[in-house]
Image (cartoon, rainbow, N blue to C red; front, side):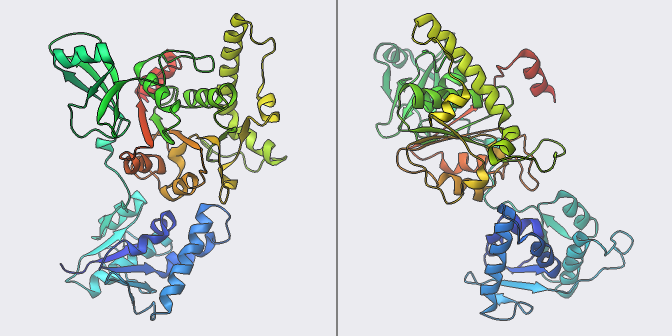
Length: 446
């Protein structure tokens, strides 16, 4: 196969520093303006800054094997080259002004297209506008999609099947049957109905070790810290959340489906009521909706409070519901507050900014708004899990606030698809809104 030339945009390398090594035996070109843009990020303490520094280390290592301006061979048989060369053709002269970095990168692609007319030159960028401009001047442009998944086939965590009358009766009597279906994933749920009958479906869960389907064992309709499931999707989600053998649970779905509320309810039950874990740790990426308010005064906790307000809202609902249940049973007289949970060490609210390097054993850990994490950030978080720690990821892949992430390349979507075949992992997609009729209407039509 003839070697192609791939010209990389800055956002590709910032998204994944190892992107330069992802093109097998082809020729990878990094315009000098990309290095200049990366240099602006290297002092940052966030993920972008760390990635910028890593890119510099990779390129510095390559320098030991040759001159970057001439191209350095890679272990895969390809070439990585940093170049200052660029060109603008007559056809593009009136379309591209060479005073913007994006256009300078396109100019580099134009130069290589002219120098190597027999080779295919591809500009790789995660910026849709750059791809449009490149296409306008005759340069093929593609998104960087290594590590993405097909959202049309996104794993939902459950399926619907029909059973013949005999097997359906076995389920009613024994609550377990040998698996008669193919291509089920560990901890996947199956909603079964009797063939030719309009009976209500029965929800079963797949045990991959025994290759059996069994009725729900961990959630059977009881209240979970004062709340109960409102639909079958929430029942399946709670069944995963309450199973201590499932160490990683992901919940995805639109706004108002109860993802965060279910996760916190299960966490409080496991930590406060059952004492299965030492602490409930709740965190979320710091990414504003709309224009940011800028720097906030106060301590770390005071700065973090505005970002955690959705968590406080859900906690307030749960503590109120738990108080009502307890009052009827006569167990407690005073309502526990969020401050009480914090003071007694049951609850920890931690910014993701400070999680790198930590080891978290015996924790029930919830990462809210996980769709705003890159795959690399997701790996960093999951690798924090110590012995007897359970991690719950919640988010909506369609509500992403971070540039260069989309519904198929964000950390939540990639984690769901890559880990769905593992026995200690479970996933549930929630579709039915339960917050309010108005919230469900907005999620449906906007």
